[in-house]
Length: 323
Image 1 (tube, rainbow, N blue to C red):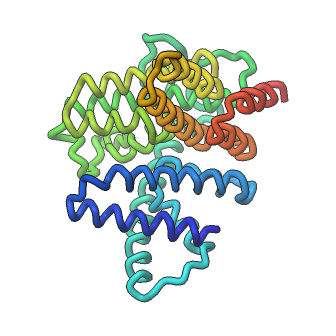
Image 2 (tube, helix red, strand yellow):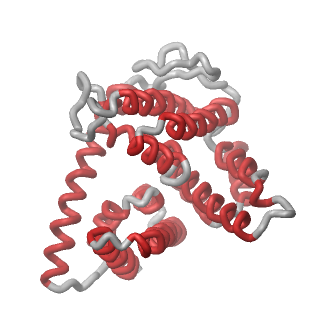
């Protein structure tokens, strides 16, 4: 199974690179769509039939946020793939370089987490528009209403505040600190674009918000960036008021109220809705895999979302709340 997934995704990525080199714009969208679907399939297989531990959930999340290079590096030892000499050299060299970069990102993230959350109960956050990001989270709190995984709610708010502030900083300093050279500002990882992007992917997944943010920064479009950050702010408010497990339910319900489900919607509108729905479910599944500390629950809930089965998801959330 791993060998099949590796061959399918790796081969299509090589095709994508060639299309980019050849400026083959006509076929890029189809290749990107294939890779996205293949990555979601890989995540579904890992969550449904992989080992019942954190490693399967971690690799599934990598596929869902389309960091398939790192995911492929994780499954390569188990894939039983036979490569010729040229393929072996290419695979080993490429995946090694990407693995080094990924390890550096994880190391920086771990160091930051240790610094920010070394207190046993972590930072505390409050709801409301007046909350501001602070390095220690002092004075901020979430409701103590018996919700599952309250610490996950707290950390979500903390990271969301810092990510929103960081991207506004990057836009204002597009020619300075956010030029992608990897330099830290006074040792602050929140001034490093790759660190902040990794955090954004744990907050909102790879669909909807992250593409808007990336496009806005590339184009220097402040309005587009604010639209994306406003959506993240809405996510933050939902987590603060109702908890992290309520976010997928409320987001899906909001999407269902869109034009795509109106009785008079045409085929194009309905297809756009279906595509947006798939993106949302995949993004929310990646978010839960990143932020729910119990892999047995995060896997179960993520599978419900990948299956677009919101009734099962809501039922599992109720079970978790009552357990």
